[in-house]
Image (cartoon, rainbow, N blue to C red):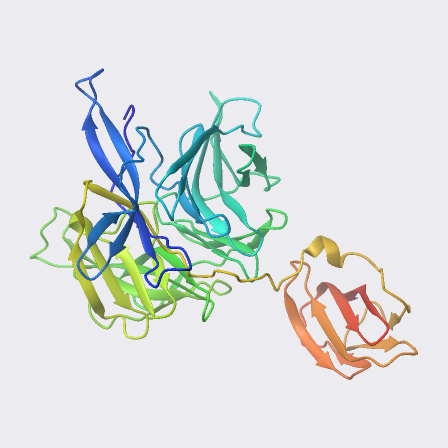
Length: 428
């Protein structure tokens, strides 16, 4: 598709600035004739605010600040620090002001790959460190496509590789989310729910999907809720039927569900099937934290609102436009705003520095417990695994029971009046 938006199904990303009560925004796209080719189209891109109850997309500002161009179906995200909307294209990105709708700039993307072409998509903005992340797929003639977690330096257009080795088992149509508190980038592969460490690009977790119903076969269109730190999405199900409208002999359906990213267990929330069998490809969904609603775009550009508590439909309205014909990239601007990271960078744990007084731990390695030797009072102890996750916390104790921990390398961080420091130990 030359000069046109690439879209398989359609999607919205909403965004709003904190001064407004309503926080749902979208990109409204209007297809226009291409005078240079009868076989392709041009398009106008506008920031729009949408009302999910009626489905109306109102242009932000006067709607006169538009630009023709193309962007990828999974390449839109809002920077809540600068109040800007980033749209990612095949080799450049565009920036819009979400408060005025003004087009601000278009800048080339410089890939870290020295050969071949790079497709950067599945982008998400991380509020806790104000950085734009995504998956970079590098194509070199005659070689398999390699995919890496990467971050985009929006001030320069430089794409920085984070994954040291290519990611495996990639699916590119089921959405991605960022947990800004644990600093993890999640995506759905065909068989696994994969988490990538935003600090270093390594695999943080990758459990297989576990479904409680044999009819379920997929989970996607994911959205993260910062209020309860849950990841929601749409469960895909099917069952054989003689009345199936498709040659496959199956009737397909969707339900709202959520996933445990550590175990891969998918739990259904909806008690009945949703009134649509498809969702927008590659553009994900959004969660309204304050009202407990999951929004997505289904068949026929209908914007659905689903209760996070019951899985029931609370709103359903076809998208209508002030001036446009397609919606992309839904996101609640207020979701996860002003959140800060709680999980520390694993690289910062791998040191023995302390502020004033040293301490030691023994035995090391250990099988049952760790004893802290210090002349100061121990106020709090935190134990981290090699991924920087807190696995145990203790207060006012010098002897810590670690028998329940799995074998491996851990970091003990101690807090007191005159000291803060880290020590590495091995649990056998």
